[in-house]
Length: 120
Image (cartoon, rainbow, N blue to C red):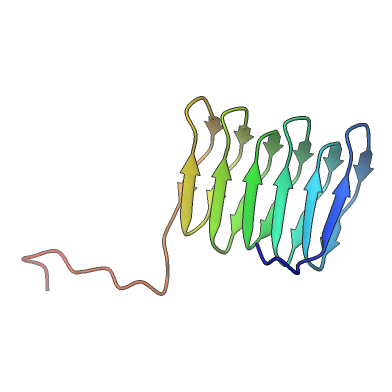
């Protein structure tokens, strides 16, 4: 995450219904029912709950998320994270104890995949 990125915070006890679009980063420690789209990072604290899709350059999750997670770069899942939904990213870091119920895709379209020997 860039040092000069804007950080928006939704504290524990906050409840939001709808889409959030952020120029910079956002931290969710409350509950969001809807999508979140950030130009930098989405951080979900231990008390954070997101029921909707997440789109960002990076995600850092310690709370509960239900929906698709789409990160341009890294998804970091801490031990307390509970994910129900698909994850698409280039790099995935998972601590021991994370709960994931969904598919994971880490295909980098820009990376050359060597052909298997014997195939033409």
